[in-house]
Image (cartoon, rainbow, N blue to C red; front, side):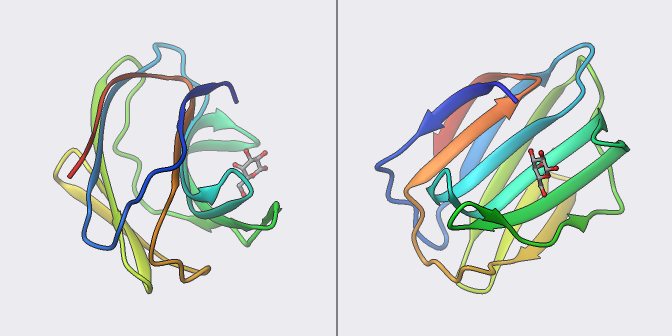
Length: 135
Ligand code: GAL
């Protein structure tokens, strides 16, 4: 997936909220939000797949440690539509990572790496970013 935005040297702490507003591409196949220490160490890979890697309308989440993916988690909801605006908020603590979508849906995945600080945040794939806010 093409990197749309990658920020490093951040200092995101438990309780901080990352808010991304964007527009899903009209013929989106997949996009992803990645959060962690760097691109090889992620506490969150949040990957809505419209049609990608054999998945249709499925959110796949994972972690990555020293470049190795963990085991994938598949979510039972898919609140995204091609060509539509979306607002995604991410926050975390040492135990879990929470992703809120359009203020109505929430998913939680375990923070498998246990990091209490994140320095890296990136967005990739078929979405155009309108704004990113840290607060
Ligand atoms: C892979 C895919 C990666 C990532 C990973 C998550 O198949 O190539 O981009 O989504 O799955 O487990």
